[in-house]
Length: 209
Ligand code: ADP
Image 1 (tube, rainbow, N blue to C red):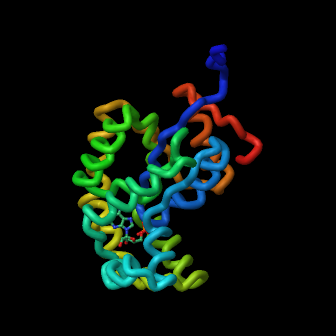
Image 2: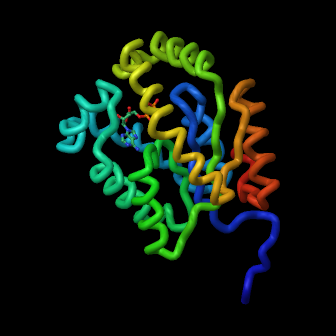
Image 3: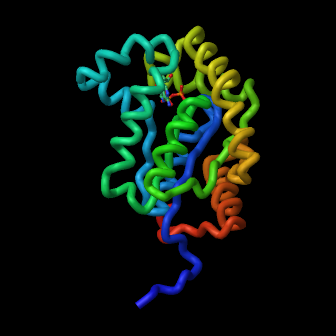
């Protein structure tokens, strides 16, 4: 029996892209829960490895503390492993990956090999000054080792130089939904769901939102 394609989306392969401090981590979890898909945040995975003292953690610790990018080869391998797990079969929300053109190519090749493609790229737009203000606040509250002023400015510079340009490529493919990231968390969440709904993507578990 074929199940009719009703309002709810059967799969959701999403990226969330935005500068540091844009709130993409928080919004990403809400969106992933609503769609019943795992949120895969490369920064979180790296940090867990650093605090767990794993071989991967030891390899990437200094890079992360400087706010530099972990080599593409290592990062893409990590993502392929994670997306190969059963819970990602029906979709995923990637946060913090891809972060440059090389990683975009790696992800495209991986998905193409599985006969899959991205459904949408959520761009969370916040002005630079807002981003810096939020990161400074987070530094006070959470004390992340890569939230010092110097490292923050390195991470933002890398975002502007390497990550923001990948949005042009995704825009050319018609995948980008641009969301104004300034507002309360609930307002921004609402904007994301409204923009995805316009593209026919309605979460199966909206109650999670
Ligand atoms: P933020 O986006 O606020 O800098 P993340 O948690 O996304 O924080 O990433 C923290 C760090 O983890 C990055 O500064 C970088 O060193 C590393 N990292 C995360 N994702 C990637 C990636 N896709 N490619 C390379 N390095 C990454």
